[in-house]
Amino acid sequence: MDLPVQSLSLATGPALEPGELFNAIMPWLLVLLAIVVIGWIILVILRRSSRGSGSLQDDGFTLGQLRRMHNQGELTDEEFEQARIVILGHHAKSRSPDQPPESDTPGGGEIPPTEP
Image (cartoon, rainbow, N blue to C red; front, side):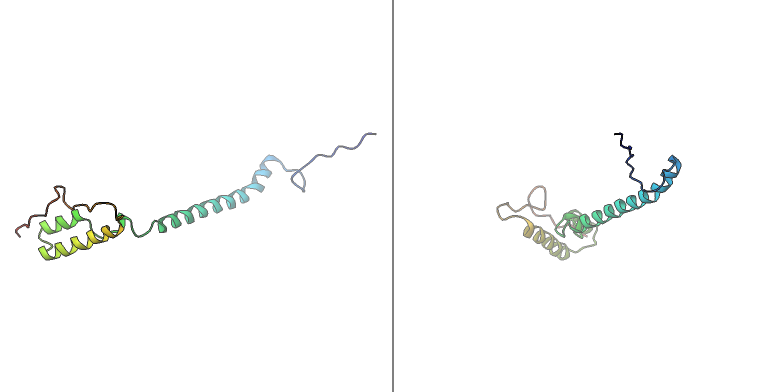
């Protein structure tokens, strides 16, 4: 009793030549590539938006920038002090309570007033 041997094929249609097979698969490969690229773009956008507003990169000014503006005469002493308090107050809120307050100058002292 010999049974006929049937070959298993993934394609239900007629057998294709290698060049024809590539042409039949190429559109689906492009669709898959488009899905991967679109998914990657969505992930990048979600990561950037989920970083939060508490990062240092979102701050309008740094103390160094304020000092430079003050030294160049773009800010008065009062404006500089108000801006410094706002920046330090913003960072003090984001700091945990057990951390000691950080000084805004390397020596830990007040910034001497400069003459315009």
